[in-house]
Length: 415
Ligand SMILES: *Cc1c(COP(=O)(O)O)cnc(C)c1O
Image 1 (cartoon, helix red, strand yellow):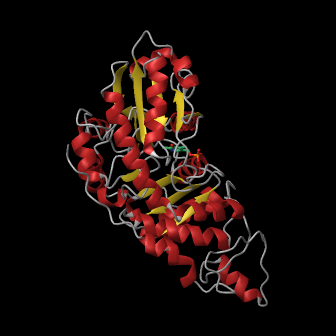
Image 2 (image 1 turned 90 degrees about the vertical axis):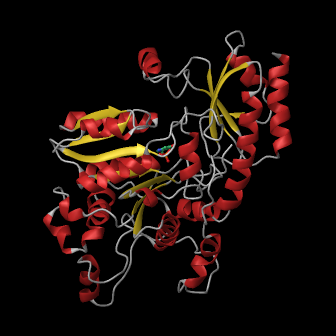
Image 3 (image 1 turned 120 degrees about the vertical axis):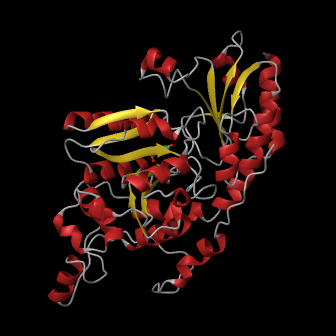
């Protein structure tokens, strides 16, 4: 099995970031600012802030010092120019689409997208957006559907629950050469495993609710601008945002039209909790990666398991791609039980894998897929997406590996 390349994550910078800012009392960790409004002695100063000529805070819906502290850390982790935070991953994605698309545009998206993102994109059809889903594991499917109306290509690094890995690098090169915005959702890998900037992404999405926070204690989402996309080629930027540097026009429009006007603002308390979780991201991911690989190997060798989907296994169709691109293979996997084993009974026998719909939590989680997160799309689409009725998803946590293996072993032994 190939060894995944190692990504140098700046944990030192994450831990020391707040100390370097001029906080009022030299706090080591930026405090929670629950404040909404700000006073200015001079009306010229508030005008300068409104007009973008001076940095400052105006109103809590737009940003807040607790959010700025986390925005800086996310930008640093993604190697980006700037980031905007939202109340959830879905708020980030919906605000981005709302801010950037116009009637008549076409969007090419991965056919393996997170279900809620797929559902959201489908809602935009009502507003005159043409939507095309393609198998993004091969760049040629994207290339075939590109046309002069294509505004953006949207995909995820690692698909949930079947773990397909998009042709990230070649799609990035294609988008760059055609001047098309490349939007990559990095939630499943997190910046601890992968920086989409390396494959030319223009905008990066993270649901902070998952690995970044790790605790499952609050929702959050972010959009990061890498500076690689030439916004002068993007016809949907309003004239008023053309006065900003070209590299930041897109995120500026998202900040104003997407965050300010739609109001999906992250709460300062959540930003603070997410920043605390983020401090241990690299430690957690190292344990999660080690646990998940061992669990995938255990399941792959078990006679009651039909199939295991995990990019760390040599038989995974994009194993080589994952090895080249990612620092490791992550904590998400899915598997199919052999037909005569009752899926619900198996899950109910597990002690440490908690039956829950979240992922990226410190705790190991388990969920039956077809009956829950893929229930709404119906059996026909499940068949098309190769989601078996016996499919189970695991999100591996940070518990000691022996406990997790023993738990799976006992649940399969009784069977
Ligand atoms: C969970 C998730 C989202 C949505 O994030 P929320 O914070 O739950 O709104 C988006 N994309 C992916 C890949 C996710 O896993």
